[in-house]
Image (cartoon, rainbow, N blue to C red; front, top):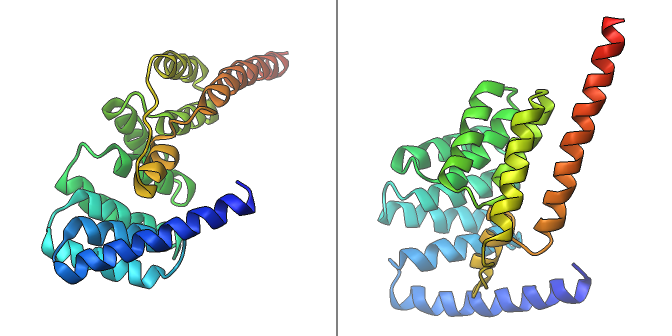
Length: 220
C-alpha cells in the first residue's frame, strides 16, 4: 500500500470516528458503535488504550459477546503484545461461542508461535478450517503447520481444497473499513489470494520432495 492510500484510509477513519461519536452521544449504550470505535482505534493505532476502554464498555453492556472478545484479543495482541490477555480473551470468546473461527485461528497462532503448544495449536487450526472452509488465512496457517510437521500429504489436500474453494467463491465487496479489514486480514479472501494459494501448492510439493531426498540420504 502506498503513502497516498494510507492517507486516504486515515481520512476515512477520522470521518467515520466523527459519525460514531455522534451515535454515541445520542446513545452511549450503542454496542455496535463501541465495537467499531474500538476497532478503528486499534487498527490505526490512534489510541489503543481508548480502544480497550470502548471495547470493555461494550462488553459490560453485552456480556458474553464473542465478537467483542475477538477484538479485545486483537488489541492486546497487536498493540500491546500481551499474550496472556490475548489468550484469555480468546478463550472467553470461545466459551461464549465455540463456533467463532476467528478466535480459533488467532488462538492457534498464539499457541504455536509463542507457547510452543503444538497439539493444542493444531486442534484450533483445524477447528477454524472446519467452521469456515472458504476462509483463506486459517487454512494457509494450517497448511504451514502441517508442512512444518512433515505431514505433506495432508497439507497438499488442504492446499488443493483451498484452490478449489477459492475458484468457486464470489468475493464480497466490503462497505466499511471494519468489513474490509475482516475480509482481507482475517478471512484472507482477496484477489491476490489465488496466486498465494498456487504458490503454497508448489511449496508443499517441493518440501515433500526435499524431505524424501533427505530421508534417502539418511538411510544410505
